Amino acid sequence: LGMLCGGGGGKVGMVGDGVNDAPALAMADVGIAMGAAGTPVAMETADVVLFSDNLSKLVDVIRLARTCRRTIAQNIAISICIKIAVIALTFTRKIGLLAVVLSDVFGALLVISNGLAVMVDAQMLRRRAKLWAAKLQGKEVEDTCEKKSLDAEQRVDALGRQDEAM
Image (cartoon, rainbow, N blue to C red; front, side, top):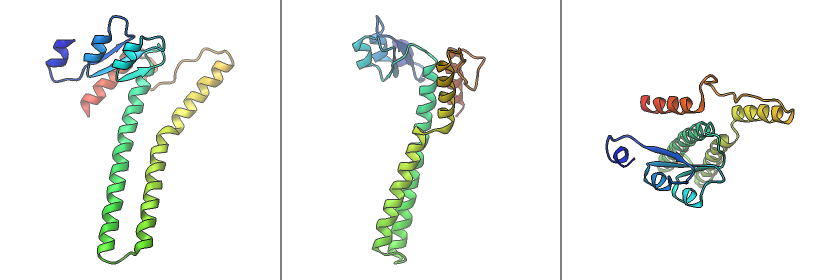
């Protein structure tokens, strides 16, 4: 792991439960501790803690992280554009104090609602609702991921290749 982190310029992720691998979790660029039964040392040294032993949850974490990063960039761009427009309109005396204050309030509401959209992703809610309904009925249901035929490790590899392509 030391050679991987220091060499090639790529990022190294380590997934473990903390039993004999806590130093590797700390050394990796991204340490991911698995399971609620993981050691406290692993939970402290890891960058991400998954409270499940299911590796397919890692795909959901990566997808959520990408969505959050995209939303943060959108919110910053929206805020800067609003501020630039308000400053330009204020210096040209096109708008008054009330309009400046209201534009700030509406800009904040826009950014907050854009951030909330991450939490209330309709597609994810529908997928989770189907899984919960099936579990309540006692049926065994496969997770409806885009790549149904791939197992969890292959899905993580596919997501890594998508990152490299971007």
